[in-house]
Every structure is written in C-alpha cells, then in structure tokens.
Image (cartoon, rainbow, N blue to C red; front, side, top):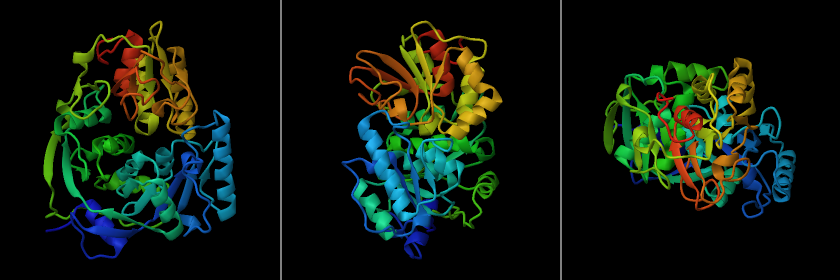
Length: 415
C-alpha cells in the first residue's frame, strides 16, 4: 500500500522510507511559530539556545495592541527574545500584524511538503499549503524551538473528494459545517482534501477548511497540491520545495465524495459543532445582539468581500453589534482599496485591527450575560467568546451579515 499526503511528509521529515498508522515519527521541524501567548508567564521559559533562527517566526496576534498590563509585559518578553536570537521574521504590532495562521499563509512561510509547529490549536490552517502543521503544547513547542525536532503518532487518514462548485451565498464554512454535522469528529485522524473542485476553491477557501480541522479534532488537515497552490507559494517564497501528492494506492480509513453544488447555508447550534449543525432555515428567527466576522478561519479577503456583497445598500438592525476583524493588516489594507471597508462602515459595522480578539473572548467584542451571538469564527463552545451564559451560533460570513441586517438569524438569500 502507498502513503497519504501526511504519511509522505512525516516519512520525509523523519528519514523513514515509509510510515503508516500507529507508527511513531520523530521528525525535523521546518518551521516553529511562536505567538504572543507563547511568552505568557504561565507558558514561557527562558531558553539558552534556538536550534535555527531561520526556522522561527514570531507573530503577536491574540491581544494586539496590548489591552492590559500583563499582555504588554508578555509582548516585552517576546521582543527581548526576538532581539536576543536574531529572529528576523517577526510580526509586531503594526502594518505587518495579523493572526499567526494568516501571516504564515500570506507569506508562504510554511512550504509544501514541510513540517510546522506552533502552540495554537488552529495551526492545522497551514495544511492548505500542503504541509503537515499541528499545534503543540508549550513544553513541546519549546523542545522543537531548541532542538529542531518533535514527534507525532501517525494516525489514519480520512479523504474528502470535493466535486462541483459552491453556489452563490454558500462558502467553505458551510462545507465544514456539513462535514462536522454529517461525519462527526475525526479524533486521532488526519483529513485530506482533493478532487475536481480544487480549481474553484481559492486559497482563502481552502484555509477556512483546514483551519476548521481543529474543530473536527483532526491531527492534521491538508490539501492536495495543484497549480494554483504552487503558483501562490512561489509568488511569496523563493525557497525550493517539494509538494507531496498521495500515492494512487494510498490507504484511507474512509473516503467521502461531496458535491459542492448540493450544499446550502448551514449553522451550528450553540455549544458545539460536531453533530450539531442544521440548515440555516431551522435556526432562522433567533434574535441576536452581536454578529462577528473574523478569525483565522474567516477573516480573509474573500470573507470581507462576501460580507460587503450582502451588506451593500443595507444596514445593521437596531440593537445589533456587527464586528468585523480582518485576519491581517494586509487584508485590511486590501479591503480598504477594494472599497469593502467603506461598504461595511456604511452598513453600520465596526471594523477592528487584525487580531484574534473577539473570537477567543479576549477583547474587542466579549459577550455579556445572556447575549446571543452569531459568529463566522472558529469555535462556539460555552464561554468561548465571553460569559458562559451567552449563546453562540456559528455560520458563514454571508449568513452572519444577513443576520446582522435582519436582527435575527437569517438565510443570506432572505433579506
């Protein structure tokens, strides 16, 4: 039997001719990404060495600009680390700031066929670039940073063959919600995407899917490479790379075919996404106080364009707060240039600087007691975005924008 994409990447990184489910792969780490939270008092330990400063990226993203004294001190520790070890790929507060997974993608820091580690659970986002990217705990990340190595238990792989094209108003987030509701969790498994639909899925759309692999509890989430991806990476990073394709006889634990043209807008009901998603019509009418579009999953330029399309010549309902957070300042600038931001502002939205912000309940949009929010972000579990009594529905940017206009959960084609 041949190998899947992830098996081939882990085999290369470990020096093995072949790896399969159940194997323990001790791998070389091609890229270690530290975020601002990596330097928190509870996580950070001063290190005596860095294995290779050229293989390190530092991105301040969760709490930027600093919202309190502890965060400011955390940022100081991070800046000291960057200076001490000569880390030149550093994204501090400023024009190059952004959510780490977005910054990694827009600079193609993680190359096809390579291994990336970061402390954040949504590190799997980089799998859209045909790499093996996974979140690690703080001690394991420090080990990778100082030794250049980490280890993974190789899991089985679930393959999704995507066919057809998404209809207007239907996005990659709806595809994820369909997968979460239909196929359930993928704990200890890898997710591999491919199929004839790839030419119709932008890199932004692919990143939404791989990012949300964390919510499937997947180990790794990755896309088969194609010409669009290879061109995307080469335009951003001159370093040579070897994209990895699955072998024709690769062994999968399961293989599912999805016709994108048959999908419709979906919503996850509060507190979880696994086996908890329904067509938007089944949740329609639920009053909301806040609507949020952003995060590493849905703060892309595609997402801001879709929100602007829905909101053009419309206005946010009285009593609803619509918050929009671009995934990076570069995306923010591009959205300004394209006219999307003006459309969003005219509709009554508040557009914030690029940060994780409201997604993780940190700042700029924390939910209060008893409030209901519909979000195009990464998680909807109890207490994620603020008070534990708040209710969080998850949907696509189009559905969130339509709901903000209606003042209640609404199908994007109904307003």
